[in-house]
Length: 312
Image 1: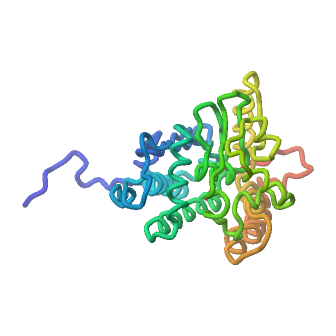
Image 2: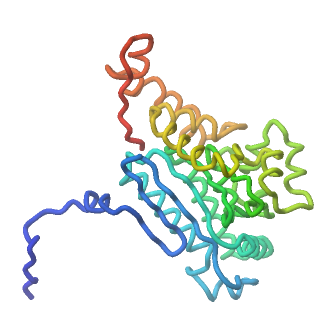
Image 3: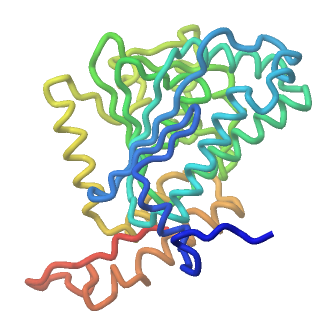
């Protein structure tokens, strides 16, 4: 059968070039908005709506539509897209939206049935996607506002971020669940909570005490967040932080972030993907450092470094 003649017949199209024209990628639970001129993107993960599965039978009935499986598959695809197709995007502002109680209900069901083969595989997949985020050579800022749901497994996104900003507002809150205590290990073998409090292990007892939900003041006091601006400075704080981060050398940021994300014990994974390789390969050997327009070459001179803003 002859194929229909189209206006583009005989013209070779570059699918990657066509893909980068899109300003966003919208999944069911994940939304990625690309701000290419400012070299950053907004990544929003939505919590599930309605009643959540309370047992293994209901999880099996939902299949691949079960929220923890579908949402994290979508997040994985978004991260891979950014790695391959968006090298100039250097920063992701991570947001969450929805009912935190639904996320905590999911966590409770997964924790109670973690010995079941399907639940075990779902948790392993979630842990792998979170490690992919850890190993993504881009900056991550977590933005906590009223309506956010950084709770349980989604709190891992905040803990994995290089900075977290939480608005001083009574309606802004974050919450922990049982899964935060060990279900999602990092490449260094520790949980993100253990890495956060490596120098203060006793702090973990307070975080995983009787209280599950923390407001901005409590989260800041515990050390769970980085900054807590008030509503007068909120927009300017975020704007300046974005402009500052995207203006820095992407190579230096890659090395520094990989060094700071993996505290504690050294493993084969962190040697290959984390501190050692990143520091050696991205700090001193890249053109942004030692090239004719690099930062080290121009150090002490009246000239200004010029960076290639592509990130891997």
